[in-house]
Image (cartoon, rainbow, N blue to C red; front, side, top):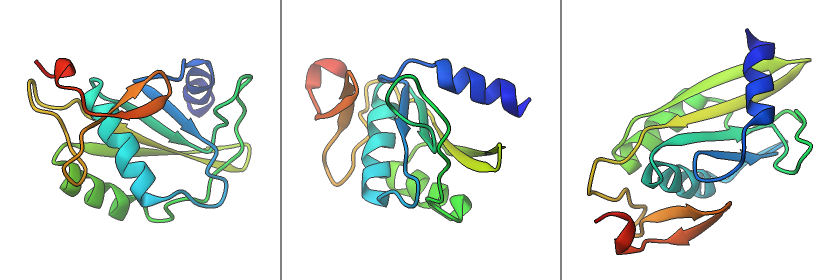
Length: 132
């Protein structure tokens, strides 16, 4: 089962529904918040830590967010949407996946008053046309 999930992640296209970050030793909570906000505004998706973002993708492992339960509690609280996580062990390496729900219809998710979304694999500030 784990190998199947990792294979699916390795094959997934990076964009508005999947974001890959190596995050070998750490990852900024502020950056995770912004990424999750953009994923929610794009219809929901996964922030994957411990898999390279460059193709061909490979599992590199991540030590970021040692207590993911606390991290998703804070992410969910700040974003006001459901965020869950899955933790995988693959060949002795840890892969952490945050699963982000879609925003409510017509209401952008914001971080400190700014709504983010993905334009390709880069985050951009809110544009009203995406929420009308």
